[in-house]
Image 1 (cartoon, helix red, strand yellow):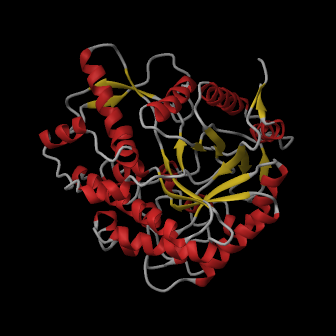
Image 2 (spheres, helix red, strand yellow; image 1 turned 60 degrees about the horizontal axis):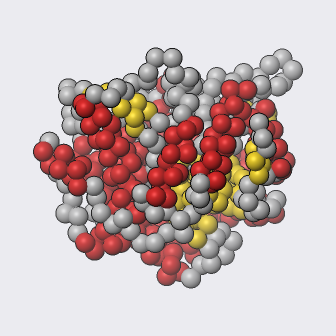
Length: 449
């Protein structure tokens, strides 16, 4: 295929999250998180896996930074564990936690790698969950307090902040579907959590602007297409609801200052308790951002199913579609469509790909080599699809592959491997996979072929 270059200064990087890689769960003054509590309940995590050690990044971060440098990555997106900074979620600052992230930032900068700091990637301090978690109306204020601490203590060196990672997952997967911490099953609670997350986002953005820190702030949304399984009116309507549930409920208040009326009507019809949607709240939520992060993995197909309350749909893969080990389909054309949609429908002017990747059961062979051709193919397809959107006028400023290393993949434990670097969880040995060397070449040439 013809080689296609990217604009000068395009940002190539990798991404991770604190709970998934750090380990050291009981060290450095770290407090308990909702994921520690959730993981300790039998049956919640595949094979009973826990993240107490995981990739041991807390102790091995310099090794991981050296690998990023070797691969030529220019940026690293990581998240801060709120409970390392404030073990109780509020109150006294834990200086050991500040020191860890300060040392990480220094190591990145010394290696020529730009830090992108995510304030919240799902690991809420358990002490705050004991107060009601994100359903508590005081939570946005606690989050703003936490954000100000990081701006004050790291803002002299960190100039790129992301408020929330995938608020859809934190709200609905954690509080309605129960597949993530805190493991609740209440739709009205999930809607309230989503609303409070956006109030917290708004307060964090305001605090960033008031801080005077040079740099930029955005958010990372998992926006992915929801396609009707058939062209029946029922499936088409179900796909529209699925899009409202996953995409529009989170894109529109953030980018348009309103919630989608069709979803408000549907939820009210099904007796969901909704927020007041106060005008001052919507104004706070929809403050201008410097960029919007897109986490894209795949589109899904949707089939109408009236027995599923309250949404009335199920996700079903068509026969014959190529999938990963998690039954996620390859739908790179959907990546292009979503980028175009972000620009045309929601008016996003600067987009950063904050996550894109795929998991497979990678195996290191007898020669110590990890040949992950399927992941390399996925990445090539999606980087080309991103370039297609850019050719049509979408302003994409960078691409972060998920993830740097294999890690603790939430409820699926250590079975899925997303990394471009293989981790032996018994020895902590790191091995760069073929996909890692591929990404190194992409970054070196600033092109895709």
